[in-house]
Image (cartoon, rainbow, N blue to C red; front, side, top):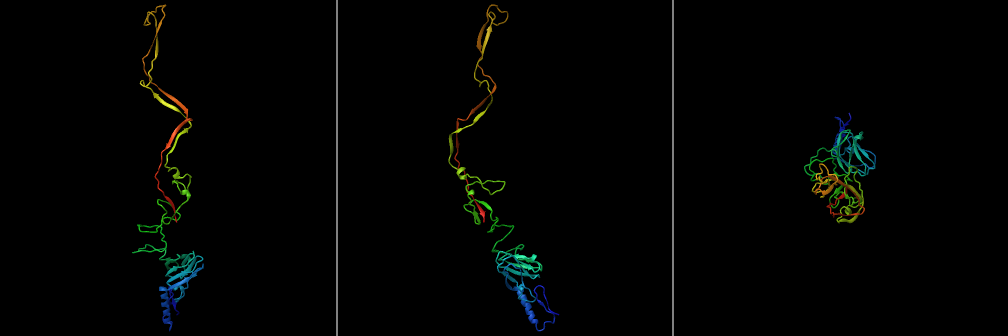
Length: 331
């Protein structure tokens, strides 16, 4: 009966009693294969845009897929997939390629179940047989570190929980974000917007689309002017009309006046009663009432023209407090 081979490491499983005089050589080959799977290193050029399949032979320590650490090199001209044997195993990959394209590692026959490796990054990947799983790249769970973690590159996170007082380089703003800053110049990572439309302006809060500018009069040369604005004896034109409201005059406030009274008397009958003496003409006597005022309510309408009127207008000096701010854009 001939030898068989293990599924994962391709070791030779020798038949009992077989391989006379070659058993030692076969055993050494198995040991060399184990050595490669445990600590072997391969530098593999994958330049171009064609997919690459790592070689895998039975009991062959020189097979490409027999190495534990595999470094991919070369300039990519398109997205590629590197296929590894579709058996359970784990690898350390180093994507040391160049070119703005993606390198994905997948089991042979299962290209849709691969995992991409970021250029310049190392990753530990485990193949389940039909899927490649990242163990140390983009899929870490909770990570506990006793001392310090030094990251070369960029840390991307959708959320952060805890006290971030000691963090540096954490940027919550997207590139292109505009902010107002109360300081002399833009902070690190920001560029001041020096557009003339923003200079010497005031802020306007809108409920529609923001980010626009308008107007033409300089804020400092108008509202913040510090000299008196006087215009003495300026002509005022127009008309005026109205009615004075009703006022009731009391006796003390009305002008003093009297009323004349004429009294007619028949002769011989001073009281003008009883029989009258015929032939004697009546006599009249004039007198007046005493001085007194009176009550009553009345109004006085009025109207006129302002065509020849003048008025003195003075606006007090204004020296309004202000604070200079700048607008900066996130780099």
